[in-house]
Length: 74
Image (cartoon, rainbow, N blue to C red; front, side, top):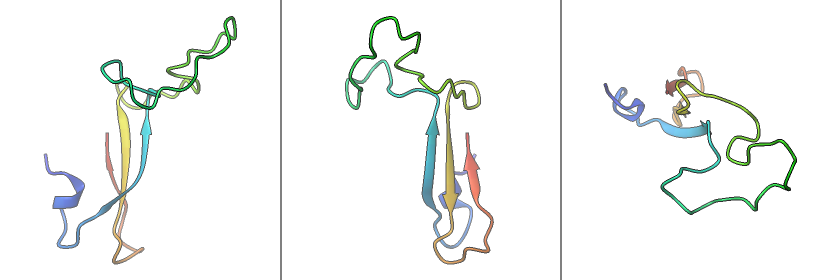
């Protein structure tokens, strides 16, 4: 499968990434401060958003033409 940047003569740029988790278990970077005890919120998934099979959604846009359709990768 081709990455959206490889599908057109003009490279698409990544516009937005929506991830199912705040951080990955194999990484210590970008972890928020712990939620208060008893808040009932999972600090790793505070919004409860699940993209695909708990992956991430990336939205790509063409910088040369706003009329070009956006591309997506899940």
